[in-house]
Length: 190
Image (cartoon, rainbow, N blue to C red; front, side, top):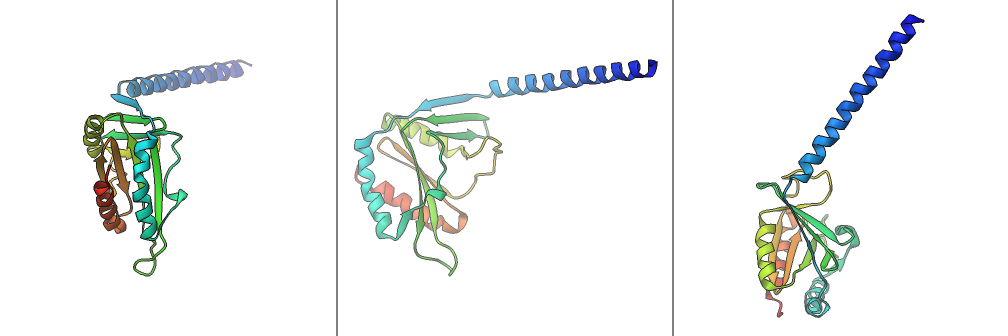
């Protein structure tokens, strides 16, 4: 009987120590995430300016590219960039975020279908677009909550046109397409 009491108290003591460790861990985790510099901005969709991109979509269609929903990520109206040097996060929300994936109908090297994605961020002004383009250039796109710096260092182009920022990305093998269609976007009349 005495041995059972000792075992019971040892189990209780162990559970209390375990709970203290768990609470300490979560308290420290919350303190770390709340101290990270974080900027959040809500972007609004501009249908008039966005309509000017029809020429870009027609060009892709003429070049044999179709929209491919598997190549872009449904983010429910948000996207996040991380500046790994300053540990700063930039969260963009709202209807002013559009993400498209494109895939070619023509194979290259007899086995790959070129593909790339275009993220379009709509800002309130050209000044704001230029400001955030510079920030995004030194940041990395954060695709998932368990993100680690250096993971998304694939080929991409970041350009501004009007009050839009375009982030074009693909696999290394399709870098030529990223460069080509970044130039097409840059040359669009807006």
